[in-house]
Image (tube, rainbow, N blue to C red; front, top):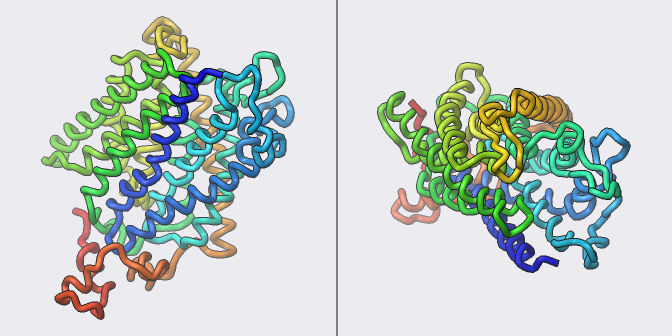
Length: 440
């Protein structure tokens, strides 16, 4: 047992766990004041559902031996309940149950990302059911394709993207970001637009969003660096690449905003930071630090324009999950085919380093397969729930705000403050005045 690497993965897991409240703050600050608690509840609720599924059969479906030779899904009952992982494994350098805990957080974050697309209008109960179905039917198979590697001795047959196709995805550009981004698009197409869209509520608490982005940045070092599964050079390269890409993406986004809109904004800085982190996630072990800078520039330049597509095509992606996570994930996955260098931990070269076109083609197939599968299956899940239990809250509840209508509470006592601290002041009316100003 490698105690140093075990300590590193324990620390990385704790860093990734902080991404959960970080995402809640990041998304919560971007919503209307009257629905911010609902958004935070969607993040926390989906994480809880995913954790239960992961322990029962999720880990087994991802890392169990493939059912058949195609590498489509792990055996869901091979490690049922994870009791088999508690005993020490003689030849393992890491405790298997620690790897299971680390990967559980990946699954939890992935489904929580989708919540941002459906903000302000989805039933909380329907969201919780959707989260469980989506993790089971979409995330688990895709994660098996990407993260499950064949055992050297042939005792475990892994997923087809990792082994048969041989694509590079160091920490989840396909399984996490492309998967969540295209799923968000599929759900909003079924769910429909918010009332009054495209005049959507302004972000009500940008300091919370910036704080959430900073916490996510911290957690991302564990997300990417921990994916090396060892404390050493590979984790160190990944750590630096993650930092470098985030910096250039933030700067590039601000430059785009300044020339396009006349202002460099804090929301743009936070969004650029996340776009860079998304794009470097699959490529952090494949490129040099200069390559990471280039990836950050590309993500920070392309993603702000990609966000504008929702107005052109008429889909209401409330918190820009499609523009940042889908587009950023595609960019990071494809740029591996151009910028990968055999000097990096993944040890393969892309087109610009003499590797030819093959790796780019492989990366494109991996991204395309995840997009197609996730979009089709997510659409079916959303349509079934729409026709049965219903996906959307009533117009009255949407107008009132989901915090009060669904959860019976409010994030801020704005009504009492506006009425001179009279506890009987109507909260909903004041929330609407604060949050309903249209975005220009």
